[in-house]
Image 1 (cartoon, each protein chain N blue to C red):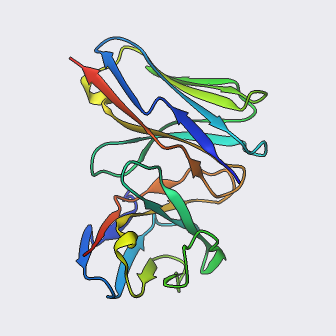
Image 2: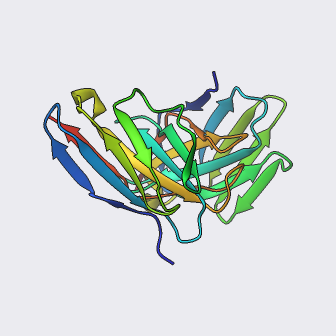
Length: 114
Length: 110
């Protein structure tokens, strides 16, 4: 079946602009996660959705970052007033359940803030 | 806070040799330990995982061992091939939040 997909694959923006990153999870997966991966590092947790609700957003760096999953499927990560330090690969993952379940990752969106 | 240390950061082996990557976790509540392979510009792909009620798991050329007492787990790749060249990440979780290691860049020299 289809895996996790993310769009766009690359996004270049200017400092101060607003960006939206989209994630389509595997069909039937109720849990969805966003991670951020900086160059040479492992992915770092940002936010976890169970269904439509954000069950844990403790990894979001500040209030410029926000994510939604209105219908319990597709999710959008929104970044306001982008800064150069936001440049990274943003990975989305989904799993059939949550605790101790295998997470399947998307290809990521590579964000570059100039 | 929760932490996973991974060593070495880079590893070069001759084709056909074995490779071992080691991780140490801090949260004693961790009970699931997946390993991902990530090729340049690609998504992390699960290659093997282990749960805390098992000490070892093997899948063809890949094996993972877990020492709960020492909070160590290791990835073993035997008979390495050039296509094994990639960055490998370990992770640990006792909930839904994966804590990843910093990655090991494996180079298999032909």
